[in-house]
Image 1 (cartoon, rainbow, N blue to C red):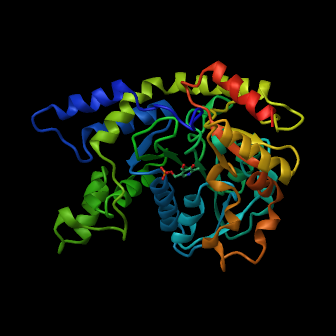
Image 2 (tube, rainbow, N blue to C red):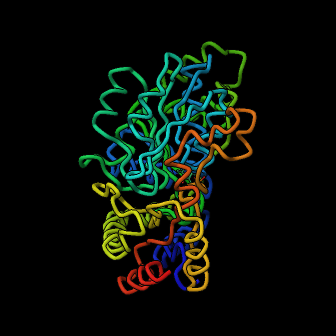
Image 3 (spheres, helix red, strand yellow):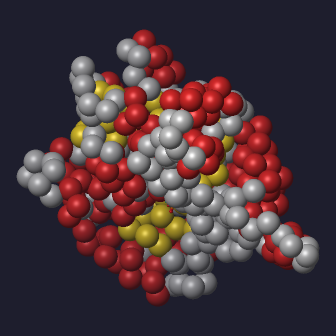
Amino acid sequence: MKFPLMRNNIVREDLDAVIRHLQQDDPILTNGPQCAAFEAEWSQWLGVKHSVFVNAGASANLLSMAVLKLKHPEGGEVIVPPLAWVSDVATVLQNGFTPVFADIDRRTLAMAPKEILAKITERTRAVFLTHVQGFDGLTDELVAELKRRNIPLIEDVCESHGATHHGAKLGSVGWMSNFSFYYAHHLSTIEGGMICTNDSKVYQQLRMLRSHGMVRESTDTDLKATYRAEHADLNPDFIFAYPAYNVRNTEIGAIMGRSQLPRLDANVQRRTANLKRFLSRIDPKRYQTDFVIEGSSNYAFNLILNEADDDYVQRLMQHLRAEGVEFRRGSAGGGNQVRQPYLRGIVPENHHLAFPNTDHVHFYGFYIGNFPSLRDDEIDAICAIVNGV
Ligand SMILES: Cc1ncc(COP(=O)(O)O)c(C=O)c1O
């Protein structure tokens, strides 16, 4: 592909950092001091107290919902976006909650605050909001209203590292937040993810949930002593508090993350500058340009038709393929999750039609590559291609 979705986000210096580690006589490879150091540096960068490094963004989603389940073993509803990644909905189901969908605002691609608030019932246990494609999905009213109603906000920031809301980094506002470090993301540990929180009790739960539910993974000495006293018949090294998972990451991933973190802010700036260049050059009569870009940290450039036009969309895809522009149709997660087979029998028939803004992006939205090493002349060439359909 002449214009790929992503190019070299793991660079020579990151690989060299791994090689230096491996050249030691007996390097630690499993979750160890490098993971702990990456967690501390990430927490500082984000502006939160605690971070837990896991093996995927989907695992961060999973543990967040597992923590919510510890709080609400009786179940309940979780408000989720129809435009997100599959794991934002699947992990809700896996933990026995009912996903309740709220349509998006086309200017942020996140759930529209008004739609979220309209879906709240006495059974709502959390709002699990995805900041889609680098856009800020928060409003002051939403944050204040959720606080007033005592409904936790869980932020999925897997596509939006470094994006901000009034200067506060996304992922530092909610009760918990999730990041992905999969290959094409703003920072990559090959596979990987992070869960962040200011809640010390949640932090201890996350550490145990990440590692088989093992009590010894907690850093709280009182908590460990209580478990030991209550379970004198058990070997203190093998007390399992929860039926949990193994979603740990390794020292190799942590070294890659630590090597990239100092470049992250500059990369975010470059992605934002690229986004502005794309938006100033694509044809506003044909394509949406009125995104809310304040505080955004573009993941990929979103090309969305203003109007539904099935003939144009086919010609656009043919043209992009012919010119070597890699793209994904439907934007985040392939578009409207409510259309997916895994939700059959769980949501009412034709439920997908209740989300017209998401359905528009599903059929008439695309994303194409935006990454720090994308040059201005390449952006201009891509814009000329999409304007020339
Ligand atoms: C919004 C969102 N959530 C979760 C994930 C899952 O992350 P991972 O692929 O690291 O499991 C992704 C993946 O791209 C994502 O975009």
